Length: 185
Image 1 (cartoon, rainbow, N blue to C red):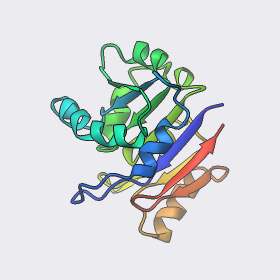
Image 2 (image 1 turned 120 degrees about the vertical axis):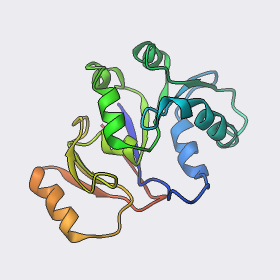
Image 3 (image 1 turned 120 degrees about the horizontal axis):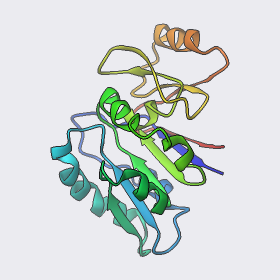
Image 4 (image 1 turned 180 degrees about the vertical axis):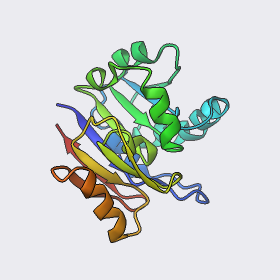
């Protein structure tokens, strides 16, 4: 079974981390397991900075367990996923993340049986369709989950209607900032 943790994202101006979110990411990781941190929704020059920024919060949320944190590398990504017990698809630019993940056609199959946390852009790409805050319209995701996603939700019915028109059979997941939903499939 694959556990998906979909997160509504963080406000840009707030440097606050959600302990419950990072706990959920790590709950099912065995001791000495691997958490893969994926920052592909940001320009590559920020990957290490984001890794170093998140690492102390991840360690606090691990409650003293001995876990390994691995920074995703675009050249080794598929091999890293095979080693990982869980993945954190961090937020940023959904289109940038989607463009990078599309280089790995086996991505959807490779995450089976793992815990996958997608925050904002990371959640977006997992659905069939999503509303992009940056692009200001609905875009097509990878379709890993039969859902349409609206992170950073502000309860606009027009956006819900547009999402549902793209996929009537899909579940609508509208998440406010800091809100999360867990799906096991």
